[in-house]
Amino acid sequence: MQGGRLSRYIRHFSVLWKLIPQARAACLDMPQEHSLLAGIICRLRGTPYFVRLLGDWPEAILASGPNSRVRRLKAFVAETASRFLVRNAALVFAQGKALSAKYSRFNPAAMKADLVHTTLSADAFCERESGTFHDPIRVISVAGLVPFKGLEALASAISLLLRGKRRAEWWCVGKGPERPALESLARSLGIASQVKFHGYIPLGPDLFRLYRDADVFVLPSKGGEGVPLAMLEAMANSLPVVVTRVGGIPGMIADGVDGILVQPGKPVEIVTAICSLVDDPSLANRMRRAAFEKARRYSAARVWDVQRRLIEATFGTFEHESDESRGRIAGPNQYTCPVSHPHI
Image 1 (cartoon, rainbow, N blue to C red):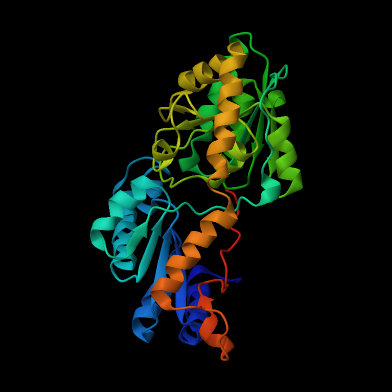
Image 2 (image 1 turned 90 degrees about the horizontal axis):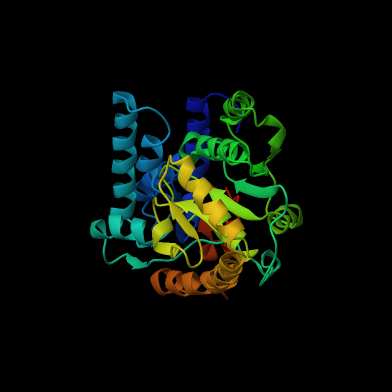
């Protein structure tokens, strides 16, 4: 919706106020401001809902810039909102073990499982048991260009690789407000010619082709992550992944087995991880195979089958009903199956 923030909220409120009572249940994805709005309407209109916690909202706010009173206040509001939605939900899915552990105490009966939201369809998988690194090394990141993704650390890591006489290039996939700052940083580090900003590429053949032509996936997030979809996409394409120890990532990645964990804000650790893969082909090949096998557990069909059973156990079966509206699951975007979220 176009217009100022307040006018958009008013129009969203009007739409959701009419839509939500027509649904048997609402699906609220967090973090998302309009899911909070929808949750409030559900409470007022008596419509039950389930929550999918896809990331740590307050942590993402705190990781998005310098510590300040305003930022801490925003994080407090986000935490209060998240707890409110979880407390009043009929069912809660959390993206990864960390989010599940953090919020299960507010509604233990509703936190049925630690399930990862995924969009990994059959065409997203490409098994590669072996391979050699390109020269220059092809490093890919797929993420929103926002502060908490920590991409400045990856820019610094590429610079360090080049200074260490390693030829490398960075394929930066994604869009967001940080792009001008990252482009400026690349110029100041002298790596502009080694960085390709691809912009946003939707999940599909063009993105899969980039994954399959790359050598290593890096996501240097500062915080706020559940289980990043782009990380799973890279693993499904048999890419070794170098990711930070934040959010639900350590609960998903076995360090040194199906990925390499590094500390956020540490470019030297990213460089060490990449070099360990380049210098030890057997390690890289083992990690490719292990990453692919791990990703297979999170195919969309398999995960949605489990989620659907839990949803129907909570709200009743949605099939074979004469009144079509009773079978709907409503949200800020109405749908009857998992929404295809952007991979970033």
